[in-house]
Length: 266
Image (cartoon, rainbow, N blue to C red):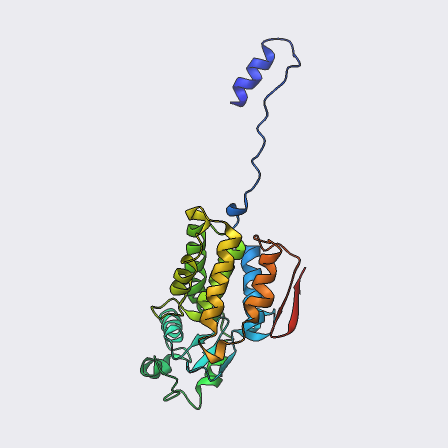
């Protein structure tokens, strides 16, 4: 192409004529998703503010405690639980990648306590060993990968299919982190179904703000079904704040509150 243009220029005198120039199309909101690295970092900080009262999410690979929500131990950057199977999946992945790690010996016990809040076979050394494992970059990567596989990627995929932007995809992600995506009435998929009773997704021709308001309403209903989740500030004084401002792309600066504490991303 360059050779052709050069030959044409040499063939005759330079004539000043209007030329059609290709103007790059503006980047649409839908072209940027929550999986954009900068947006994903915001998502991690927003979830950490609600889960750990901090924006420094990378400090929580070593976090572990029983928060008395019926799910046994809650641990790591996304709250993997010994009673819900995702902690078991995480330790199995870590052990496939690094056999003989400090947590591998707990796999039989994690299989036994799955579906319960029991610590049988885990106490008294599991907490100490989890914190030790969290110093291993291989375990940190396993946490990142399981977070993405189980929670982040499915939320973003469904959000894009529904035609919602970055904020909507984050609303999905935060919901699936807390409620999982099982078949019970408070799971992510059933929160979404409840929202669809009163509003259409943008992909169905609905208005995005209207739909997200319906989704967040359904989310609050689900949270109130469990005493451990009855504080709905992560929706009321965070996600709904962004929605009222119509910040559907989650563009900084962002100011929000969770449990009365104020946070800012500049």
